[in-house]
Length: 248
Length: 380
Image 1 (cartoon, rainbow over the protein chains, first blue to last red):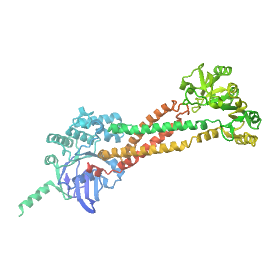
Image 2: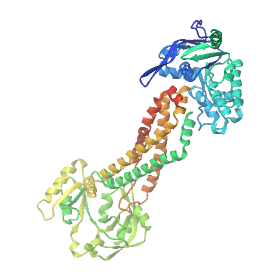
Image 3: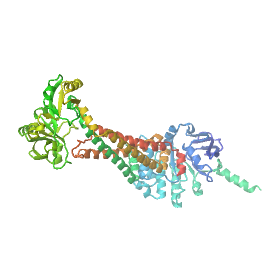
């Protein structure tokens, strides 16, 4: 279940209350997010859409502990991350969040295997255990035969699949995907979306995805629109739009 | 160890840049090693000087000879255990460029006075039996390819008549400590006084005195100079190390020169390496941000940059110092200085290289550490 009205029961995986984020640029304060509420249950696949500058990436950064809000709280699985120190937040990210970026952001000098292994180097796993986890993750994304290839030897779609393997290898609580298909052709984009859907349906992962692509958004179980820093559920938005159209 | 592949991969990212930076360190540390070896050569006399040996020279300098009868007068002074004399020969072997130290010695006293130089007993006996015999140092033998039994002609300086003197290599000595000078030639005093012009009879270059107790060296020094005060040949007595140090000072302030050159080189190296590391970090802003996003701490990122810088410094430093060690072991000063790279100099070199590496990586490392992930990812 996904709610944006702040009336969730607080039992869900993610609970956001009164989230504000503003920046001061050139002496002028810009409010990116305003009083945002969100409740997300485990196993949901949520898509955030909205025009450029609406705060989509900002909300992803705040949910992933990459940025701190101006006010409000974010709790994940009972942990209030907005109250954590920078150091604690880093450790929390390593344990709970998998990131997938539009530009893949693989380390170009490391093979696919080494890239996927990166999050596991922070764990006490042995070399053999790490190997087993990395191979499993690469199997899930269908790239076990390319594990020794370097990013430059892979196509864009394959690179993004390696990035997804890196995101899931440490079995995080949820995945944050920022325009995961933004740099891909239609076929590769569909493959990535198939893979993300599979992670939700068969492996029970929770995914929050920012996208501009309506076809990508269609794969999500819930669609949230961000407009001027306010979240609107797609159903509500459609209703609002419909009301606007029929009202003279 | 599990982060080593990441570290090495980062260094292999721009191979030419890494090679050039390692090369800068290598050249700087090679220069450091050579300067340290030359400095050790200059200081060799000071460092290996016997604590219980004094050198008695003429008051106006080492070129002023002293009367031979002084020897017995010195021997009788309280605190004096042993005494011998020596004279600079200054002959030329084939070409004046082939400079090396040549001492006229009293063989009966010499081994007692300089136990640090070892000569095989059989060879020593051969030397004693041949008035034209000479003992040469191991490195001097290597330098000219001389062997036992070789005939060596030396052209005496003008003040010794300027004629050719013939010698036979009878023995080769070795030093027992790393800094011992193995580039000398010793000839017998009997042959010297037989062949030198008549005005050389009864005079010597200097005296070497062994004191009974090194703690009383200063008292004995004063006693010797007092003994000959107001005579025609007044003396200046110094400990062997003070004598070596004053001899070194005649060559100029070598220590300052070495320090000045070394400082300039390392300051330049610091700028070059610091700039290289800063560029390397700037190029990898997105990657460092991703590392932080997936859970790598600020300190880890700082450590990663420092480790890269240190690895470059260690690699370049090791190669440079290794080369310097090899080169210093050769006769790079044509026998003028016994150069060698001591363990302490190598340790200092390693410390300097790692210190420079650490400093060079510090600013870029701190900048990487302070990187704001959300901001850095937005810039990509």
